[in-house]
Image 1 (cartoon, rainbow, N blue to C red):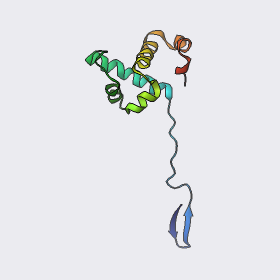
Image 2: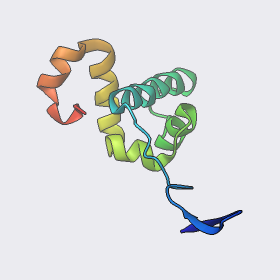
Image 3: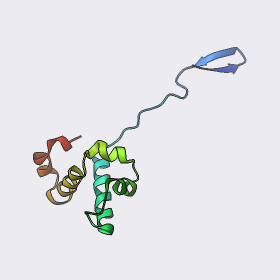
Image 4: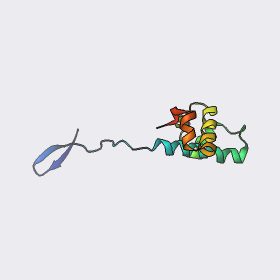
Length: 99
């Protein structure tokens, strides 16, 4: 606990410096990473594009890409679902992709 000095002396300050959890739109984050795969694959080709390059293109860590998609194949499936099939059919094919 942090104490602050006032004319009355030291008193504890509650809540100072506590972290506030960020609200993350997981669906938007998945789309951001999937779009990064499309951009990276357009530049180098799909077979030459790795997860690290996708993470760098998306501006996130490699671990975050792995958290959302697990494998490169799952990431490619997500790109296919996001871009070609649409939201309704995506939920039927892979319900785990829901937030």
